[in-house]
Every structure is written in C-alpha cells, then in structure tokens.
Image 1 (cartoon, rainbow, N blue to C red):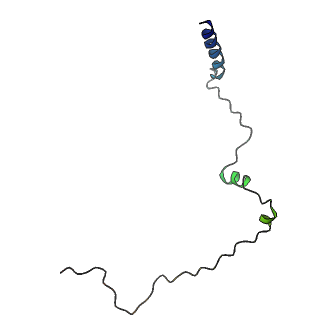
Image 2: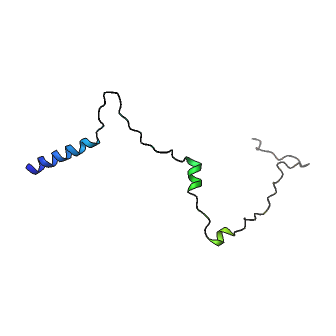
Image 3: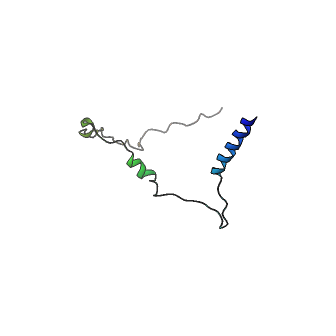
Length: 88
C-alpha cells in the first residue's frame, strides 16, 4: 500500500512539470523558434536526390518521337449516317 501511495506521489510531482505556469500578466506562451522552416518547394529542392554516379551525371536526355496531332475535323462529301433508327 505504501508503494502505491509513493508511486502516485512521484507521478503527481513529475506531471506538474508539464503543466503551464499561471502568470499574472496573461498567457505565458514561450515561442522558442530560432529560424523559419523551409516551405514546400524550397524543402523539396533541398531534399532532392543528387546525381552522384557517373552514369547519372553523363546521361543524355531522352529523345522522344515527335507527335503529330491528328486533324480535329474531317470534311467528307458522303451522306451523313443516321444517328437513331426511325420507329415504325
């Protein structure tokens, strides 16, 4: 029983270290930021993989085949095909 009481006392005293202290001057918030954090694109650029192997450094850019865009409309002299059948 004494052990449980002592353990509870130790737990209560150590938990009080994490409770914020009430200040008569209002909210006692401590902002301990030393420098700003890198944001999205800057952080991604900082953490990108580097080309360290000679096979990566001397690699030629990929040569993709050229793409010719097909005509959007084709003009035809044939009669138009019916879209729906006539009901009889």
